[in-house]
Amino acid sequence: MSFRLALIGLALCGITSCSKQGYIFTSFHEPATDGLRMLYSDDAYHWTDLNKVLLKPEVGTQKVLRDPSVVQGPDGTFHLVWTCSWKGDKGFGYASSKDLIHWSEQKFLPVMEGEPKTVNVWAPEVFYDDDKKEFVIIWASTIPFRFAKGIEDEDNNHRMYAVTTRDFVTFSSPKLFLDPGFSVIDAVIVKRAIKDYVLVLKDNTRPNRNLKVAFGKAALGPYQNVSETFSPKLTEGPTVVKVGKDWLIYFDAYGQKIYSAYKTADFKTFKDATSEVSIPEGHKHGTIIKVKRKVIEKLKK
Image (cartoon, rainbow, N blue to C red; front, side, top):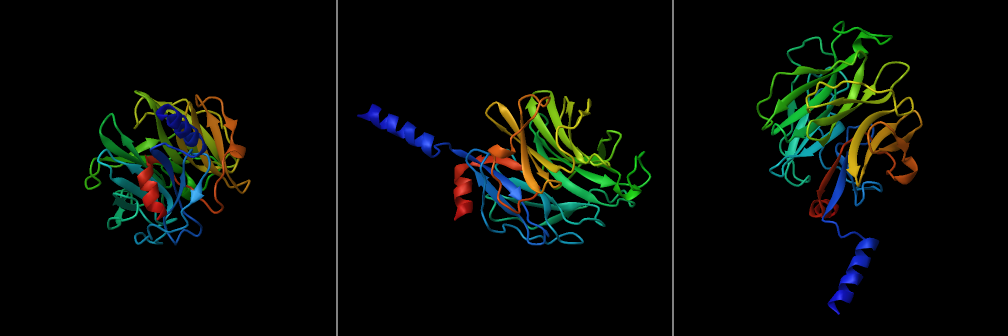
């Protein structure tokens, strides 16, 4: 009888989901003044909007919350960073939470205050480097006349910068993280294995404005061998999640007015998987993390 019940249980697991983990996709809606939203999923392919605002932006010149990036530290704390102004700020927003519901006081982290000519700080992305036991935050900024440019305006010629921290109280000095020889924004770090990292990035030059990858042996790089593009033109805001043997790269295909996904096993060949995923309307640039199912269940209440 117990064997039969076990078979029934396995069958039900196939219909529903008996996994103890699920996925969260941070999000925002335009015009980004409302605040942090989230999607959730059992399989990282089909997403449902929580239909609630979890954090209203209070810091920055414009007090918006764009490009929310979240990571869970080894102690279980979630750390969130976001773009808080289009231009004029020399830093980004930060808050932490134990459950993604109750948040700490928001802070403005002035990472580029030492560069007075900085035009903007865009799309901070937080990554936990388990090799060095520290958090890495990367972002795009423009410092006019600092780098060679193509047809970009001087106030739109971005490079990627980085800081590290162990506690979000003290930070390393900001350093140039990536100068691929062109304007670059929206980069995300992916760890495949020990000393095997991939950087998914947006070539923001005209007329390209598409996604590429580069490769490195450490979270902080250096990243080399920048690929040709794998995405259509007018794409941005990538995030990456591993599902089974494949990596799913989600991104905003704003030129096509859709949210898209590509699939890859090796970051060399890519397959359009947009028809395999479902994303709620209005979702914008965020990051995906795997969480315990009880975290999602509490968020849904």
